Structure formats: structure tokens, C-alpha cells
Amino acid sequence: MNYNEQNRGFVCFVYCLIQTRALWVLIMLIMLNFALATLGVFGVSAHEVAESLGFMNPYLPYLPGALPIDTDDGLGFSLQAAKAGVIVAAFLVAAFGALVITLSPKIFIIKLAGFFTILGALFVATERLGAQKCALAYASASAMFMVFVLLISWFVYNARSSEINEL
Image (cartoon, rainbow, N blue to C red; front, side):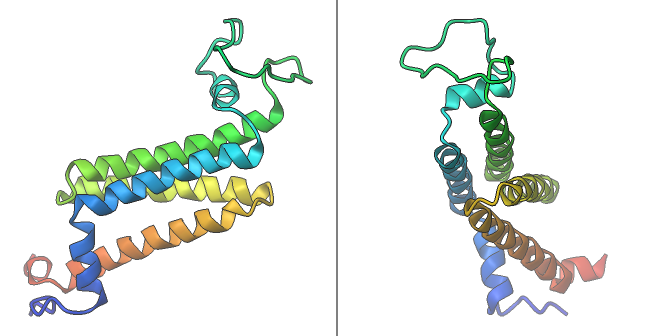
């Protein structure tokens, strides 16, 4: 018996919502916004974060307009930039997971991989932000809860559908 035939209720609404690309583009933009907010909260520039993650050679001249980096440790980047870099990288990985789902939101394995990528990256970001006692941790935890509700609703819809029950 297919309980989803009437297409009513919260689970059916969420299932129809996660089948659209617009939701995943919105989630990707939210993750990019969280990455930019992290830079603002920690007071570091994108150049410092890129350098602390190893994307830039610290011996190259600074980009025009970039502020010089205060190096107390002699490594070429500040400890604050390294902490922010891990969090920004986690949010960028979550945005990439949303981008993967955006490419084909109706294929099961792609959607599953994207969900787990987003949840894993948000877990890392929330844990790191919580360790820094940052208020952005609550927003990250809320986003993680929202994605978890989307995942559970998708699983419940599939469990209630006759396609899965016939298998």
C-alpha cells in the first residue's frame, strides 16, 4: 500500500521540496554565506585563510590590497586564520555537497552522497565553532538540523512508498 498517493502532509511536502534544484541552490548560498560570516567573526581575510590552508605560497608577494599578516609563530599565518580556515573549508565542502545534489536531485546515490557530505561538513564546522564559543555555532547547528530533517523525511517517504515495499 502506498501511503504517499494522496500527496498530503509534511513528509510529502518535504519530498517534493527536495526534488527541486532551487532548494539546493538556496542551501549552497547559505553555506557560502556562513563561510563569509566566519571570516568576519574571526576578523581574518580570505587571503590569510587561503595561505593558512596551504593554497598559496607564503613566499609569493601579497595580493594587491591585502593586509600584511601578523605572524607571532613565524609560520607565515596567524593561529586565528588557521582556526577560521578549517571552519571555512568545512562550509565550502557543505556548499559543494549541495552543488552535487543540484546537478541531479532525483538520482538516489548522488542525493545520498550529497546529504552525507553536507551533514559531515556541518558537523565539523559546528564542532569547531562550538570549541571557539562562537555564536555562529548555533546557526550552523540549526542548518545541520534542517538538513537532517530533510534526510529523515526523504527516508520516511521512500519507506512508505509502494516502490520500496515491493522490493
